[in-house]
Length: 89
Image 1 (spheres, rainbow, N blue to C red):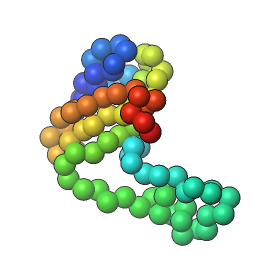
Image 2 (cartoon, rainbow, N blue to C red):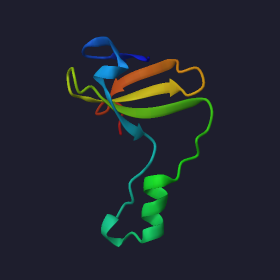
Image 3 (cartoon, rainbow, N blue to C red):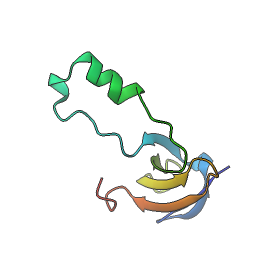
């Protein structure tokens, strides 16, 4: 189990959070003009690289805020955790 250091509530078990996906995937700039291939790339295709990775998590059983969590996908070590609004995303 991961222990996510919520900046508002302190360290909490991952069971209090809902995973929101990769924090670095950019939504198509003009969704109404995007073709099917663009949507497939956005929704389904990921690199799955080893090492550091930024993820979105919502603290659903706490402050309910969206967080940007830096995590190593090999060791599961959490390297950073900031409120999404503060991270510039």
